[in-house]
Length: 240
Image 1 (spheres, rainbow, N blue to C red):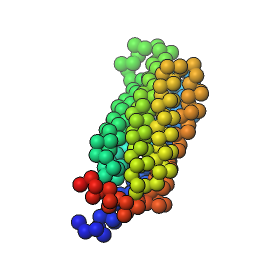
Image 2: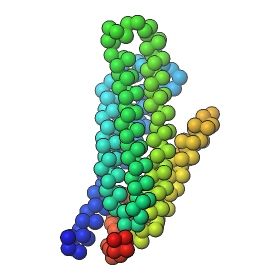
Image 3: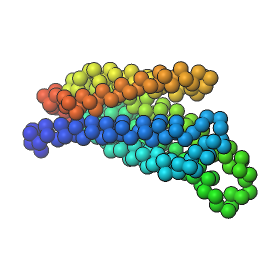
Image 4: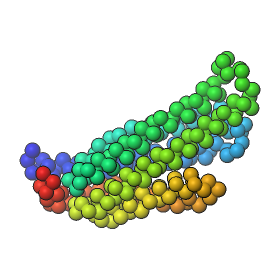
């Protein structure tokens, strides 16, 4: 591959990575935050079950949104690995496996929501449960789904910390998005560990976790500025 082709390839990778992350950043809040906040009433199993039955299409749309998110994550993981590999192959693998683990957990976590639909399906074999028992089970699985979010948040926090460090040290991407990714990674870890250890302070740790929006600095930088090709080529040569 010629130098010009190398340049076009790395810039294309950077732009595609940026676009996919931004697309995901639009879909994820809708499926992971808006829909649950609209349908789920904390502590009220009956109302929650009624809301989901009345807006099943919206609930299923959330499932589709979550599915698109973790499928995009698989592609983004590979692209980011290729982008950061010249800095450190070992740390790039740590970042990639952390994000891949997160995506797998996100996919498995959809089972909790599918079980909710099964419980509310009205199937004859569910007649052994009283209505209030079914409603309680619905809320149980929704709560389980929310708890698993804390688990994949730990993996994503590690991914952001390592990726932020690699970007900060790369020389071909600005230190600014690298530093902001490190902050976002700490926010994810503080939120997940904080809620696990001190659930009574969940609101505080959730507010800290909201600072994780800083992670959008990377795709914005890649989309607008791209990669410093001269420095990238130097890194590639050093890692060869």
